[in-house]
Length: 164
Image (tube, rainbow, N blue to C red; front, side):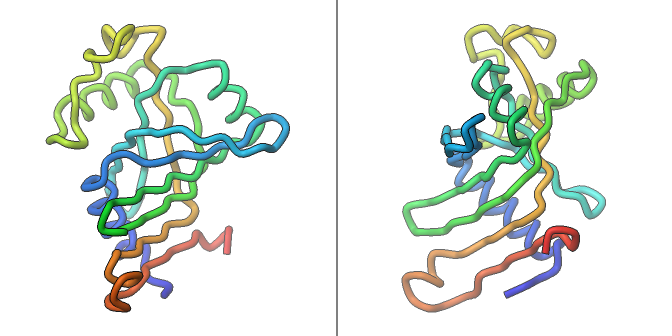
């Protein structure tokens, strides 16, 4: 069912922050899918949903996003709650953004929040091994497990107007 961005984004953030870890897929230079596990944090502010990933700027990730700047983030829980964000991804290289996201993760409540300094090589937001990806969704889908298991509830979805 199509729903407003506000309704879907709120449900998405609630579910994603409860599940915490997502399988993220990119495509390589040969258009082959590649998956990894990521731990995004999502901000829903002033009608805009933005995901942030603290990550290492590996050559593989850089090459994938250079070939295609899109990522699919799929969350799944044992009760079969699932939510997906199809996003445009871009590196946030400026130090003020890196500092803000470092502190966002550090100050957020568990299980989404954690101290980034616990990762080897991440001594601070200006560490060469620390990078930030900004995720801008163009499509969201939220499906409570009750829809699959009992036919109860509804699937919420939203697609940006320019990507319909």
